[in-house]
Length: 151
Image (cartoon, rainbow, N blue to C red; front, side, top):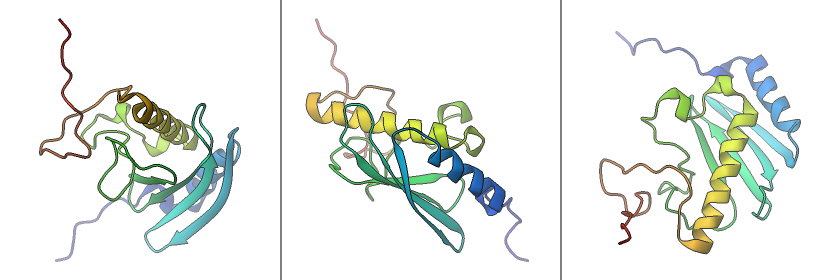
């Protein structure tokens, strides 16, 4: 007996991939550069310039339903995984707190832009603007620092 059947990822249908790419191409301040398809997934590269952040090259890779996002430029951040990909939401978050394929490309790009703005603020001020989740195991690169109360 083989592995149980799994529903194919959203991008397995060419129409869904085409719609996703078209949505990216229609966004202001986003320049679609390349699309690469490979067995079991695809990636898209584009440039993005969020307000207050220098232009960045973004690579979004899909191997499953979850996007893996890499960005050029400074990588110091309390919210990046050890491989350098952005940690934009906690994997255990409910559907309304993370990107879902039905949200479309515009919402994923908005998540990426917001994350880059938060990283830039954190680099300048040492403060993370936005929600944070403490991981089950201590991860020095991804766990937020405890907040000290002021007296």
